[in-house]
Image 1 (cartoon, helix red, strand yellow):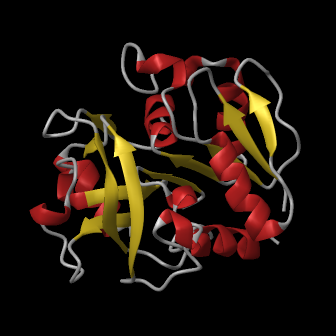
Image 2 (spheres, rainbow, N blue to C red):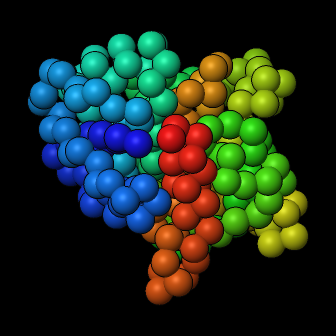
Amino acid sequence: MKAAVIVFPGTNRERDISKAFKLATGTKPALVWHGDRALPAVDLIVVPGGFAHGDYLRAGAMAAHSPIMRGVADAADKGTPVLGICNGFQVLTETGLLPGALMRNAGLKFVCRDVRVRVENGQTLFTSGYETGQNVTYPVAHHDGNYFADDATLDRLEGEDRVAFRYCARDGEASDSGNPNGSARNIAGIFNESKTVLGLMPHPENAIEPELGSVDGMALFQGIAGALA
């Protein structure tokens, strides 16, 4: 499986993602600069976390207009899977590849800690390493992770099984106590209509080794690798 990781000025998780896929597949992804106009032939595109362009204007707004994002959008339209994590999720909403927006955390503070998330749909190429309803531990590190969409969009996401992950308490209950940012309906990640684009705020790439406090993220990368093998 060949993957490409897009690198913007200010991203800081591209090497974490690269390590996760190297462990899962044995192959290191290609790093592609945001100013490039062409993507290599790959099976997966990843937009990593960080603070692309310093998160000026809105988080992900400037990155969405980088030359490489035209290629990412074209590839996504043709069915190439795209994974956006944290700042990458913000970029994907700004490009229109995913609906909604990521706003300031409800507490107006940067949140950096482990959270519990529940897998809402384990029947996709991104989540095939999990069971639907499984609870996992991922870290979050964001200031603008409060997912917002109008009620009609939220109803459509839920009705079409396009909610990928939901923040939850340890018992699996999606409640305010487990929501670190005020995200609507506890949403932590969503799919596009064809479920070939996934955006999520937590960082599975930082939950791949015992030393990091959790290995729950490894199943995501192994599942992707298996689905695209």
